[in-house]
Image 1 (cartoon, helix red, strand yellow):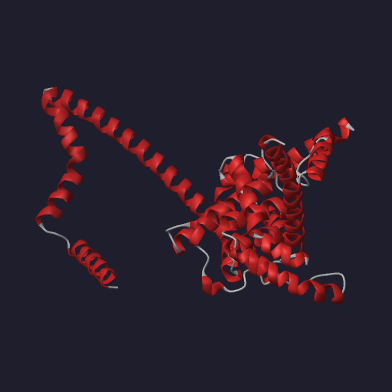
Image 2: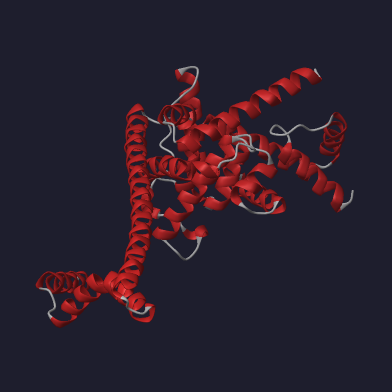
Length: 169
Length: 197
């Protein structure tokens, strides 16, 4: 008998029971097992392993199932909430972006109208409008740089203190 | 006969497709039904893989939470049980890595004690009495089999999975599955021989 035949027999023995084996393969493996004691022993061990594994009864308790279902339900609710929040943020962002674009366009047109009536050149009016639009952000940034806000300072110190505490642990 | 096979195939596809749709929707009723349906098989698999009941129960819950979160990745083309076991496999591997990152072969915690805590079952008290010693020996022998081999033995002989399904589930070649089964069976040889005597 060749090695290939033994390998084929072991493969078929391993697959038997869980997969569809053709009648020809079944007949071949049976004839091989009747001639080969080593493969026959392996087949018996496979049979024994299967029988013993199937005889070990493991059951999940109803408490475990109930706890799992409750945790899954809670997570489902959490995920739904997160999704709703994300949608709300996305909608708010879109509305904010649209209103910003619209107001910028209106201010630009207004600036053009002012420039036309007052007689200012566009080279002054256009940067002026841009500055006017960015002015609030520039002022706030400047103020924050000049006078660091105690709230931010406090938050930073708190964060550093927590980090330090975490490192100690 | 062909028509029967075709109709059962269509029914299976429909069922798997329904599960896939339900998982995408995160349908809690479907999840409840799936937990009920696969409770014993999943716990048994995890218990054999981990070898500790308390840890297996934690991982059981963790697996279902991951099924919920990764549900959109299930396309319904494969059997749901195979996908579920692959999720459980990953959860168990993560757990084993956290417990001992060096090697999965050495993950067996010696303090875990008896791995299965099987509930006694059998048609009669006599059968239980006769089989008890054999089961104890077998449990002890199985606990000594490395988790990698134990896993394929369970999937093949308890879950009746095809070698190709196991290979897909664990993400290893079919040849490796066969080798692991062979080595697992051979590792159980003394217990099986002892039980037969």
